[in-house]
Image 1 (cartoon, rainbow, N blue to C red):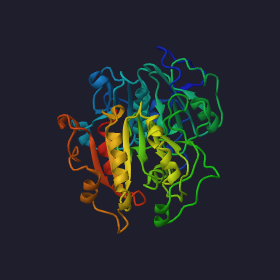
Image 2 (image 1 turned 180 degrees about the vertical axis):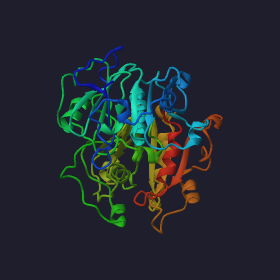
Image 3 (image 1 turned 120 degrees about the vertical axis):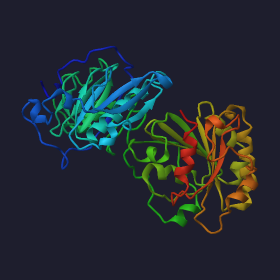
Image 4 (image 1 turned 180 degrees about the horizontal axis):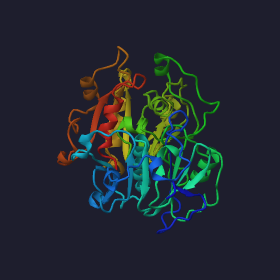
Length: 442
């Protein structure tokens, strides 16, 4: 029995969506890799000799509930109908095999087929974390390839053991993709470029890309990137930039921290100039704070992380721009497909609270946004002059909101809008506020 199939092997099964694909980097093996087995004998891989012991591990299980859900299940016995399995070569706590080892990876597979790739991605990550020996039982609309530490390219065959620590990059593609057929060895960049079709490169330990790299591919830094500054300078101005799009890798980092790891959504950052929209966008992108200059013309900046698209729209505070009254027209162009609105208010600028309320009221009364959840952020609470939550609620007319602890199924028709106080530069209040918003995203 071979360790894994070669690049010349052909994948079988039904044809999937050829335009969709995902790629996951499981971390480079250098410095953390297990032994390299030159023999294909199973005992050399660390598998027990008896079948009963071999069955003890994690199974990837599909259930039709909730539009199709993938589970990772620790089990001491074979789980019939499982899609895949890995045998852990690291110690696993015994309690996980006593009814506590079932974890939901992702739901809604039958509604959104792209989620299939994300589910498989999570399974391969878990296998890697546990130094697992992997066996795929079904390729169900997908095929698997991986690159080893020596830049060799391999096809993952059904029912053949593979060593997770031999995998530095795992590619998940639709059936009959043909893009890696015949490739035996190449560079990591060429391997990744071939899969994502747009020059995306790995950065975090895990990166997931869909639809030819539209989602989740890291953009290289450019000379336009601003220098890092201190917190007070970052509050002073807004950024002057033309229309620009940045794509960032997905890992357990930003999306997991925000509670939107498994979401597929378009989120708008709206508000008056200098409220902190662009600062928040750059914090999500680069984990840094940048100096910005006041905006004279409407700008549009976009950031894509994983399967979540963030857009920030802002008009400068200049009188000429305000007289043109184009702010509302600009924002409305992006309302059609929005899944959530983050409205950011400068909690320092008392003079502009009426203007901020007027803009917020116009958004809340727009029929195109009638079913859209609103997260309102009172920013800059790290500075002493910022108002408190109670005062900002009164100023914005948000005295009767959804409730920070209210679950969506207990809302009784109440519109999902809530105010959270935060400091973008201190990362205070950001996590809990986005976790609240995530409840309403698919």
